Image 1 (spheres, rainbow, N blue to C red):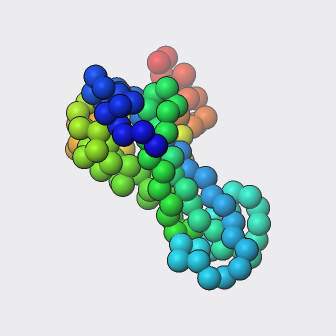
Image 2 (image 1 turned 90 degrees about the horizontal axis):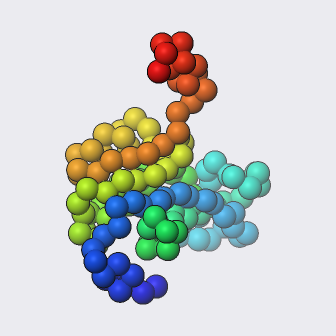
Length: 133
């Protein structure tokens, strides 16, 4: 990948996109291989989890491989740290699905001066509609 400064010579982008996927493994001897939630529906297979951090245009900035058993939100902390250190931090916005950004993962970006965008659930939407929002 090209160095961050060449991709964004004017500084950091205001928006970062992040998501994870998993890939199952054949065999049993892999340093990152673990049993976890398998998005491919492959039961009995170890897997790895892969996180992709992109700028707002979808240009990849970082890829990280995790052991195969963290929940999606557990991978957010390292992404926040990457943006804060490698991309000069600042007031940026993370975008992730509602399985990615929830609970503690909402609080952590705020402590770094970041914002977030995520989806809300159907019951949350219905509650807002009932109150006239």
